Length: 293
Length: 306
Image (cartoon, rainbow over all chains, first blue to last red):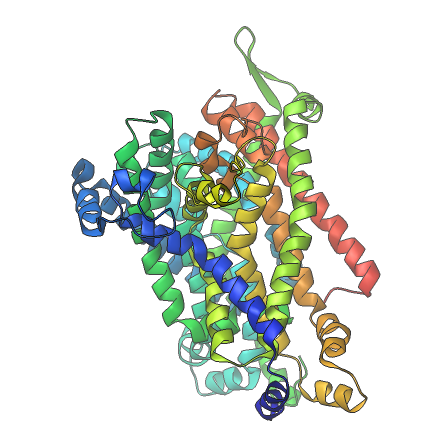
């Protein structure tokens, strides 16, 4: 019924200003990506003094050669970084989601003593700036000799108070108490009730929290920068940031490093962009979970 | 929790109350991580901040000494001042862009609007490091289009990374990175409004503009409040973007540019871990206070959050 009224008003007045506004937004938000793609096809010379300017292709199309160089540069360390990013964000993201789902369900469906108090603490912790924890976490980990291991990145990534909050809000509405009771009356244990009755109902929120925590870990920079010093353990964000600093510090000598940074940046954004485009119908509704309450 | 089947629920309530540990069992795995990676670092940072380390004196207990030092340290204060100024200017711009985009997208159902929704959101899926690298190249007089662009009007391109322009340069990067995420939250909240309200307003003679500003915006105020809190927390702990731009900024991004950069440099460049902990902890306190002031103010104005 909404669509009918919407379409009819749109037909009455084809809104030109609105569409011009949208086109301007599209250009603004896609411009850096267009630049990145174009720049990835240039050789080092073309990147500086290309024939077509910064926003158009050079006469030489060098994309494949650039990728080739990326594969061989320092024994393919870039792809090692990419693999590390995938490992950290999968383990960290999946782990954080599992913890958040369990805790959110526990908060939503079990009226135990101390629940309101612990949930209030959880809500308060959403306001704690997580980056302020990075340096203390580093020092704590170095006491335990955990710095410079993959666990130094993965374990702190499991912390997602906001994920717990989202799961609680969602589970409270989406999982009816009667259904849980019916399962219990039928003799189902608590864990089985959770896995077979509650979990399927919570799926949209699970996908959202998973996406948010995978993206959070994949994009993280401060934590791995602080806790890792072995280049072989870097995620792609820290690796690219390091190349950038290197390229800037020896201006002339770093010329060819710039093409690696550009093509490396392009490749590094492909997995998540694809994930978002293909999971559209989940996150578009899910991201607003917290806002609707 | 309005529930018609309250009768059915009653027995299980009693049963669960008799076995309170089941609820705790579900929460325990998260609870452990919460204690180890949130509570413990906070406590440890606070503990470390009570000591100071000197070459001659070794590590000595200094009580609130580090905090007195921090809150009179011009470098820390200038960092705090920078992130507060940045938040005050950034957040209204970001809200305006994401609200305007969401309102337009909500009113249209064309192919262009569906494409625009994705295009605006895409930067959220891109790491802040990569987003900053791209804009860094675009700002650069050698790599970017600015030199060519300004040549057309016979002007030399502005140095966006110079100390006078870096504020705007960073502003643009953050708006670009986050506006889409906020837009999606607002957009979804708009979609959640019962459309019969618009119908009623139209019958009363309200135009599309009035519907947008008198009905839609007030009805999504809790989504807006959530975004504001996110943006505030995110901005005060500003780190990645200035840190990545730093090597190419020719010194306009200093080692105390933001509190987090200052803490990072104190820890990893100068090995002043006690003072770095103090800075981290103080930043946490500042964020906490800022968020609470905001929540308090918005509660007063709107008579209750959510």
